[in-house]
Length: 464
Ligand code: BG6
Image (cartoon, rainbow, N blue to C red; front, top):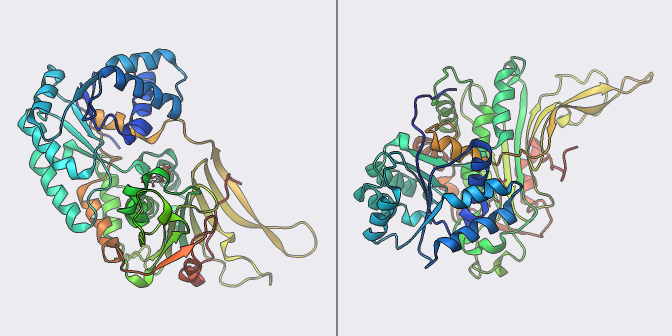
């Protein structure tokens, strides 16, 4: 997939430079870009904290120490030297005049809005009015709205100031190496395509489990919940990549077109397809409202209404305070129409498993004969690949692409709209909330939901 002829960004502006996202993800990504790709453009932090440039530099060093690896002192020094800082209110035009001055003669700046979405419109408007937005690219982070309507409104506001090809919407799952590997494995091997459909696939499962709670993100999380936080975006992107048709062109939109087309074919969820759970103790987390009915776990059963997948149950679950931190996708193939050897064979014996985190693996499950006279067998899994966690973090890859104007790994307004369309009717309190103990695989109702399409396959802490 190619996209050439784009001019590289010649300055990078981080709004919200003193915040959490910058601390946990953006500084480590910038460090990686300086170290691996020779990034040498000015990096201008903007925030309203009353800070000095030296404080921002200290923050960058601390970020690398905690979320490193800061294994190259030279690169860290070069990163710190590139930093500039503007302290100012996002509602004050003076902030943007100062920014224009700091940008000097930059012609293709990239503005990263690591700020609450409620400020996107204000900042975009000021960028445009102050000419800091001339020739610029804009990077924004999910959540893109809190439902279909608000996502559309946000899209319309941004479109007033930036053209679609200059807006880069991050869903960091798309920048993950193992997610890219699903696409590669599917379309680099002709053997999978003939069986990748309703004739051969019995079910599809995706599990994203986290063994920790919402920790210091109580306030944010309590306005979000698992459906908006990870199902509407990360999980549906993974589903699209797993089930979309092969891209037929090599242009940068070919894959995004396939993802969009698949997501538009997913039937919108109804209350009967959803189980929401909340871990015991969630309501005691600082920032969470007393009596909150926000879900920390969600399980859904989806249908894709197209010829390839019609009738194949798709089960997805995601949650916090589950037994392990791991994400896996399993495609289960159908058993032979008749069990020739009279054995009781688990339905899950023929499968393909993509482990997305924390380590990376692709396994192909099959049944082989146990040595001896009896015609009986055991389940085995052939490992196609097994790797430690990818060393190039998704934010580094995505930021590098955005600075080069390569938009393939970013999500698009029509894709976001298709994703909200799927979950819109089951947001908020549209379905009951069940409590589950910490360390359980969500509430028991999730087991009932999957029913005969199951059982759920529980990922282990490390790849087998
Ligand atoms: C984020 C969510 O988008 O993704 C978090 O807001 C979640 O709640 C995180 O923990 C998971 O990402 P990763 O890369 O750690 O699997």
